Structure formats: structure tokens, C-alpha cells
Length: 241
Image (cartoon, rainbow, N blue to C red):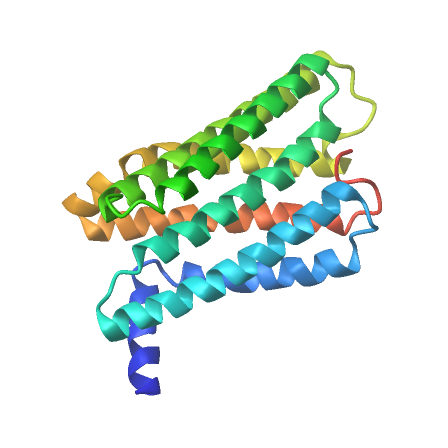
């Protein structure tokens, strides 16, 4: 039975070019680096929590996939709850990161609005899960909608960072600014993945192969973001520099 489950998991991971187990290893590595180099800074500690939740998420999702392959059940509710908690942790970490990075008061006020808006949408989503008439199709669509909103807010925060970067005189080389690499990777991660999440269900219905290829690309982009954050953790300077 164990060999059968492992075999099915390998076949499942092959569809996304094994990016899921690789990303899990990335989260574990980032969590270890975060434990060693957090320096008790709030923005670092929040990224450390993000790494921990990401590790737990991908461990639990792989367990859910194993049960799904074994029983044939979809477990959509558990999957989307885990995914949404991860999104909240991800956005919270980046919120405090950008809160320190940005200097313009107007941008910081917009960040607060973004955070409050996303939190409100997630709370409404969780409340909706208590209603029996909330169908699995609607749950999946609304979860993807939360993904799109989160990535749009991340994209807007990156634009605000680049605006300040271009309008202020820089005394430090960009290559010595940990924040520059984090924001650049996050920018491409968010802007490239928004169209995918907007069309994910339609793509899945049309071509599952295309869906899994794009999903694998999404995980690869996330791994790039994790690499840039872990690289920033290794710097002695604040990651918001």
C-alpha cells in the first residue's frame, strides 16, 4: 500500500515537474535560515512565520493529495482553507516588509487599506464555508479570487517601491540592497501569476496538462521569491535596506 501511494504521488508530482516537493524543501531550508538569522527583527520574524506556515501547508497538501489518490475524494474544502491561511501569512509578512521599506505616508496608508481589505475578504470566505449551500465549485472560484486580490496588492506594493527607488537619490548600490532583490522577484511572481489564477479553472477544464505546466511555473516563481528572501536573511544589513 505504501509503495502504491508513493508511486501515485510520484506520478502526480511529475505533472508539475516535481516543483511541489522541491518547493517544500525550499520552505524547510528558508525556515532553518530564518531561525538562525532572524536577529529578532519584526519583518524577519514574520517571514520566519511565513516559512513555517509554508512548510506546514505543503506537508499537509501532500498528505491530502495522498488521501485523494487513495480514496478518490477531492478534499477541496481542506485544500482551500490551507491555501487561504497561507495567503494571509504571505501577505502579512510582505505587508510589514513594505511598511518598513516605503517612506511615503500615502503609500503606507494604502498598504493598511490593502491589508484590511484582504483580511475582510478572507473572513467573509471562512464564514461562507459554514453554510452547507456553499458549493465546492464556488469555494474553488472564491479561493482563486482571493489569490488574485492578494497578488494584485503585492504588485501594487512593488510598484510603490520602484517609484520611490526611481524618484529618490540612491546612496547604496542596488546590488547591495536586500530589499531590491526581494521586491524584484515578488514583482515578477505577482504580475506573471495573476492571469493564471484568473483563468485557472477554465484552463483546467480545457487542458489539464496546460494547467499543471502553468501551476509548476507558479511554484517555480515562488521558489525564486524564497531564494531572494533567504539571500537577504544572510545579509547583516536589515532586509528592508
